[in-house]
Length: 572
Ligand code: TEU
Ligand code: CA
Image (cartoon, helix red, strand yellow):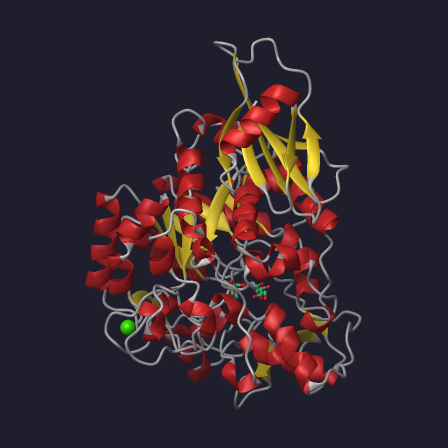
């Protein structure tokens, strides 16, 4: 594999609205981000991905862009953005923007012009399609519920929106539209961006016949994803984008891809792939319900671990995945992936250990580094997220009580990841001095940065140790390029793997074992016969401060015992 500048980097996702408010309007802002760059640097972060900060009516929290060339007033000014870029450069850091080009906002000038002249040039920027027998052109359900078609007033046309009706889909078939988008991407890259996280990109290719499919729900509709799965040729668009933009700048791109066809991985993220990398969502999609959140599946440890292992094995030798525990669309990983008995600091550190040292680029989501958790609400009106509101109704329609439906939102809501960052234990959690745009998780009094910064055994301190280890001169090569080899797969509750690196030229070899016990009982692992060239086993990190103890045990018995919720990183 060709070496790339971003292979050994650690990334961090900022959800700007909830990061830090510096002007007292309850909304996070660019100034807030600038003021925390040293915090991120200390955490070991190289790349910062900002969820959308463009001008937007915020129907879908900025994923509905009304002007791609403007910074949302709520977040600050273009001058502040330039300052942010400059300040990150000073610190040797990189910035990614969110590229949302499957759709824009219905308030975007293009869409406004299209509505004003539904048969004119700008209508061609969207999918304006004639209805069938006075009804929608097809039976697609949008991702946020209801028909994916909305009437164009005063005509027999409908426009397509795979997400909210305020997010009309762009017509990628139109070369003029593509040129507009490329121009915009290059404009941002010229400013000095390192690249983009690319939103919902698999959806850009449509079957222009818009065929209807067998309904998959009582509403008589079928998820619009069905059309995406059936249609061929999205890769040609991806190549066109890459050649016209990213490639010229050696930009880093991380794609949000669901529903990729099996066997396309190399095409997507290989040496000459469409993108630098893409998120591994395999563990997240595993839990998705067939019908929605209300029938989301319960997690079995083994299935979860095996799914991650599978994704790792498939990517090996092909490309680099980007590994996440959570993001702004997902519940908090500490609440979702940790079994009840492990929902504590040791458990959170264990989850970090097994995730961050996988092969690939780790993306830490804001608040994950202090172990922020899901947040319970008492009424649906306390939620903001458009998808949560839809899924709540969906659960009620399926026969759930309001209490059950709220429980479902507690477990699955996208707002779980969007509650404001918990900087300290004071009023407003150090996030704001006024009322936050979305209510804080009340546990900020216990879980917050200030408390954890002052405590060497905190989750935050551990994250710092973990990123430092991953980037250390001595082990960096292995953590970056080392082969991923699963271990002790037959042991109940054990999540373990080796990272093995061999340098063909000077015959150096490093074998690092990452092992964690997600079970409730202690478990002993045999380390195998010692290698003749081995100079001794070294414990590089332990989430319970047992480095010495495990080293001695390994040296004297050839085994290590992991207590429940214990994780250890050994160089063997
Ligand atoms: O998400 C794309 C997407 O497919 C989501 O519907 C995802 O499946 C869902 O959020 C899981 O609950 C991206 C963004 O990450 C998301 O925030 C936006 O709402 C969406 O695109 C539309 O831009
Ligand atoms: Ca603000």
